[in-house]
Image 1 (cartoon, protein in one colour):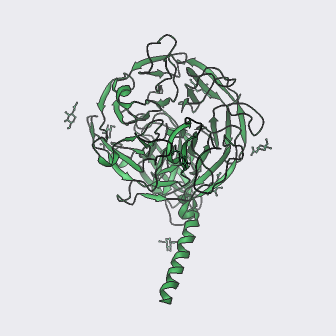
Image 2 (cartoon, protein in one colour):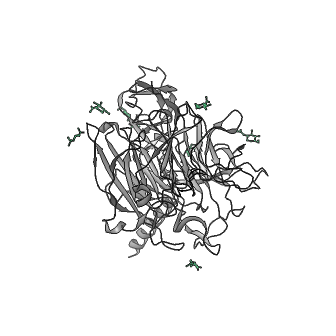
Image 3 (cartoon, protein in one colour):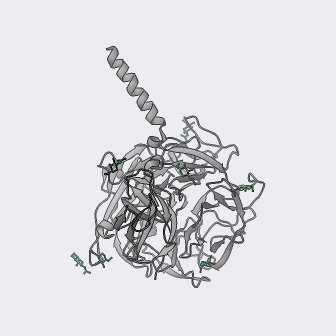
Amino acid sequence: MRLLSLICVVMALAFARSQEDPAVMGQFELVGRSNCVGVQLVAVPDGNEFFFMERPSSPHPDGHTANACLFDYTTGNSTNVACPLSLENCGHTFLENGTVAVLGGHKPQSKFVEGRRGIQVLNLETNKLESVGSLQYGHWLATVTRLPNGMVTVMSDSPSPVSPSRKDLIQNPFYELWDPANPKTTKLFQLNNNFLAKSKYFYYPRNFVLPTGDMFVWSNTYGEIINPLTGKSVLVLPDWKKIPAAKGMQTSYPFSATAAMLPLRASNNYSVVEIMIFGGQWSWGWINSTAVHLSMRLKINIRPNGTYEVGSWAAESMPSPRVSGSSVLLPNGDVLLINGAKRGQLGDAAQGGVAMLNEPNFTPVVYDPSAPEGSRYTTLGRSQIARLLHSTAGLTPNGTVIVAGGDRSDKFWCPETYSRSPTGFPEYRVEVFAPPPVFDVQHRPTIEESPLDFGPSEVITIAYTIPAPNATVTSVVLVAPSSDTHTNNMHQRVIELPILGTDTDGHLIPIEGVKTVTVRGPPNTNVAPAGPYMLFLLYGKTYGPAEWIYFRAY
Ligand SMILES: *[C@@H]1O[C@H](CO)[C@@H](O)[C@H](O)[C@H]1NC(C)=O
Ligand SMILES: *[C@@H]1O[C@H](CO)[C@@H](O)[C@H](O)[C@H]1NC(C)=O
Ligand SMILES: *[C@@H]1O[C@H](CO)[C@@H](O)[C@H](O)[C@H]1NC(C)=O
Ligand SMILES: *[C@@H]1O[C@H](CO)[C@@H](O)[C@H](O)[C@H]1NC(C)=O
Ligand SMILES: *[C@@H]1O[C@H](CO)[C@@H](O)[C@H](O)[C@H]1NC(C)=O
Ligand SMILES: *[C@@H]1O[C@H](CO)[C@@H](O)[C@H](O)[C@H]1NC(C)=O
Ligand SMILES: *[C@@H]1O[C@H](CO)[C@@H](O)[C@H](O)[C@H]1NC(C)=O
């Protein structure tokens, strides 16, 4: 009996220790305060900065009133960025040359002027957002997607009416195609009417460029694969109406779920696509209703002739309910779910001024798509900061996750203890969450030398070191930079590169301990739209820090 209780105590202690071990639970670290709220978060290629845009929430910690800033997650330093346009609810992506582009925005707000038709690029020499053109219709809560040919789509509903010249249109059935090489204006395409009729909420659609060049478009409970260059529907995707557990599950604003496309694998010649949608709120949900605790996974096979074989959505149970969270696709193919709430809807103030989102979900979870069903989710260590409305997250070049943003941080219902926003309504504190693999330092490969760019099917060799003497890299991936807002990380993509050879005996690089791995580039820009990526080397599930690399269209 005594022995048994001793064993229990030892086991409980070991459990308690593993609950605190960052190599098991990951770890949050406060890295600084940004000068504006990270409502919109975009990784700035080629460095350690993230570009934040916000809803005007002056006075800022530095007394300034700019509505955008650059934040360096390694130093905690913040630099103001000037922009006269109202930016909240805009969309963002990266151009082939790595420049951040911002499309759409908000109606006039505070001292900032009409931004819904904005087309802007971030100039890092002047620290200004510069207008380079104008959209034809207003877009807010707009998803921006870079296509394989370098053009960009902007797609969203629009606050009614769509434009001064179309007072008849109170919902926006149009998306626009912008060519950065000819930036002043755009081409308009009309979507299938079903998008507005069936999805009900056509805000921040979940768009993923497929390895065929077509686009997966999902809004709330309805989706299609379309050809983004013609607007034509290729096929209507299945829904989950007939899956009892998922009946009533809604996924678009204000019931905001988060979504990700799982890694594109060289081992199947990039012919299998899997899309996941995590959480959301039920159709009957209100400010105190428990959020959706399910994730949905859909497999799409691409046949050799380019047609699709679409499976049906599979529901899985998450460890906790989550609405208004963010998803971050990690270099090892796992998906980190972070931020958001266990109750309520995405939004500002309900009637009477009470909060729409309640009971923060402080605890990130990670989903391993390759684990056996039923054991794919792992709960990680919690944050002390509530991140509800207007919170964001994105992958850093170190393989950690920057966690930012939060508005209406002064008022919500919460049964747990936490650290209140020192500035009330806006949350300027920025954290970095390091997932467990980052602490496996013995197996983190560090890139010593890699090319700055490469092209389709080009063979490249990467030199690296790894502390464990006998360990060699087992996979190599490209990860597109994060561009996250309102639960929509609209640009993330992981592309596995086939390993053609490895060298560990110093033939290629005669420096002791320096090993090499040779890989082939993605076959075309459908698999990897041209532009900036982070190159990560992996040893099993552990990945090291990345180097920036450009995939070129030549
Ligand atoms: C961060 O900003 C401070 C104040 O402007 C400056 O003194 C410091 O050099 C900056 N640090 C880095 C690493 O840029
Ligand atoms: C990148 O391309 C865009 C669109 O052509 C252009 O506006 C921008 O100035 C370019 N950026 C750089 C750094 O050359
Ligand atoms: C891989 O797919 C491409 C089209 O994306 C095709 O041209 C090529 O033949 C395929 N390779 C194999 C080995 O199936
Ligand atoms: C939501 O829950 C909180 C805490 O139990 C309670 O104070 C509040 O009245 C509830 N609001 C509604 C609308 O039910
Ligand atoms: C593509 O291949 C599938 C399966 O082999 C076949 O059923 C379909 O008719 C083909 N479609 C076209 C357009 O060739
Ligand atoms: C990268 O992550 C490791 C592990 O958490 C940490 O020791 C290191 O300081 C980080 N480096 C940067 C630049 O963030
Ligand atoms: C590394 O490999 C060598 C040769 O196979 C072996 O003798 C040595 O024990 C290994 N070292 C470790 C740390 O596994």
